[in-house]
Image (cartoon, rainbow, N blue to C red; front, side, top):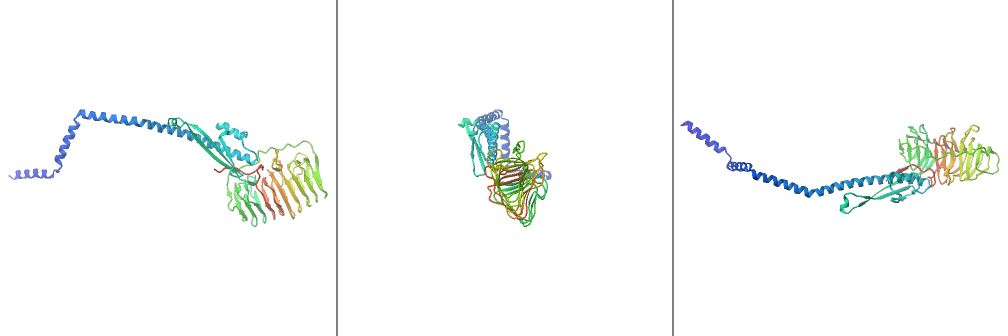
Length: 442
């Protein structure tokens, strides 16, 4: 009797623990089993799924092919764009260099011809403009063919690119790769060149030295090395540790010196004015006392002896002149020395010909002491042209005043301004052979 009650109690507990949803779950299980066991229904469902996928793929296939075609066309147009950008960059740089030389830029320019040959872009596709007097903007356009976009009615797509290059007007280049004081301003020196800059190639930590009490004002100063000194400097923080640029006149051909001597050890020690003609001056030219020396246009070959002005009051005047300072085994090299008390030194370089813009050209193989401009009480100097002294120094001494010249550019081993020198350099004109480094700005 006791056992029966226990058994009944257990059965009742078991029934009470079942979920009220148990009948429904049991029924669902039986229904699920019936579907699994239903072979024909299952086969029909699979066939229906495969059909939907096939139709969906057929509908999307043209879209996928279209996207693939657009990707191919886009990739090709990107390649064309990069090519045109390279062309516009190269043309802008080449034509800016032509602008520096005072020459027009067209399809006959050798650099432009090389660009056309390299990239296969005709000159007719190039448009040039000049946003500023020292800038050239080159725009290049081309109708690029398409491949898959033709089905949409686009057989070609216009592609264009542009670039702007400029040269920075530069009045001073120092070429010495090492050594301190490559550009030096002494106490009381006042150098003003607000519309042009200076490029100093020396990598020394004291490549530029602006001594206390001096002033150096330029539109820019780039230094391969560094600057020292507490003088007044504009810009106050120059660009330091820049990349070297090299000699901007490295490609300038060396003048051919005619054989023989037209003059030997030419000296004028009197007070009478004199006019000199171009030619070969063996032993150089020496002027003393007070004459006014007029130099007729042309090239003066100074074979040894240099060009010397003594302690008198002589004045030099000449237009369209170049002085090539060289030497040989008989006549040793000597520098240019223009000093004295109050001379007027007014010379300008040629505006045409192979030595266009070159006022002084030192033999690149020469070595010697510095070339001196100024000194004495008042030295009024107006030099229009380039002073090219690759391996020797240029010094402006106290009392010198460089005033009013259309442009003056110094390319020298190093440059020094001493004492009360007052310098006002102007930027190169359109026909200056040296107008500054060329760079892309856009």
